Length: 406
Ligand SMILES: Nc1ncnc2c1ncn2[C@@H]1O[C@H](COP(=O)(O)OP(=O)(O)OP(=O)(O)O)[C@@H](O)[C@H]1O
Ligand SMILES: [Mg+2]
Image (cartoon, rainbow, N blue to C red; front, top):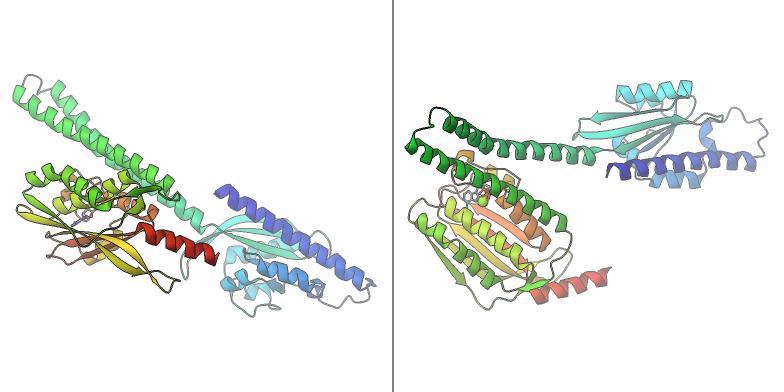
């Protein structure tokens, strides 16, 4: 990604400079270059076609003549520094001291410069700036910016992810190492303690295994997210299988699960294994975070007509909702639930063997199936997670409509 961006930048930079230079040549020849017109400003040398091409470049570009006046700021640059800046002196236009200094320095010495800087308002943005000056007179200085914000955010997200994953693995690993030392040391001949510690070590090892499996699953699903699923899946069967697999957990927690099917449910285009994983995650959460002892999990499957942006008619979606009667989720936590490792109550989730990756996996599976996930919750009154998946026939109709539009 980074290389692509840098290459794009270089191409844009080189093409911009070539255009500017060729624009000069063109003007000079057209006017016969008598040299008598020394008083005219450098800006007259820019042909309308050069202006038009520079204007359409996606990267912000600013051209400054030797007197320090701005002769061109393309659309992307005007979005940053404001409109009506042509003919103004560059020191009245650039408000970031490092950038202004670099432009003035290069304009004076001809030495090119390349550096990164940050803008804080209205939102934090990172840029790479390239400043260069034409070798021929009249000297034109070019400031070209390349937006690095997305690259920086991706780098931060990756660093956060690695820090979180290592932390999550380190905790059970530390417990296992601690108990190994204890078993070698003072608990060496204590049979009761040994059994107890081995039990804890086995739980911690399972936790690490679960975490690694979830991480691998998440990576696999993320890699495939752009590949549309190809199978045809009976959602009712999938939901019933997911609920059946969780019956022992529900029984241990004294939670009843009911599955209600409303009307005839069409099939969906999907990956059966992924959909099983999706509903197991949701039903497992409803059991874990539902009412402790004597709770109930309601799963309802139906068909709901849903409007699609850009289309006049509606699209049939299969709707599957998983509702519990637990404590619910604080309003401010709802938008963060699908973040990796996010847990409302870390201690409670850990006690229940949670890794905080379940809903991140759910979100990616829903995306891959071109579905939607809705989360509703009232504190003290339980939570409802609804997944909407496009029905088989309806999806084909929607794809056909998109093809027509293209
Ligand atoms: N039905 C629910 N009711 C209340 N809180 C919930 C519910 N479902 C999820 N949460 C909250 O969202 C958090 C994230 O859920 P998620 O499924 O991603 O992780 P987890 O259940 O902690 O771990 P994992 O699913 O990996 O075992 C949970 O820790 C819990 O705080
Ligand atoms: Mg979960």
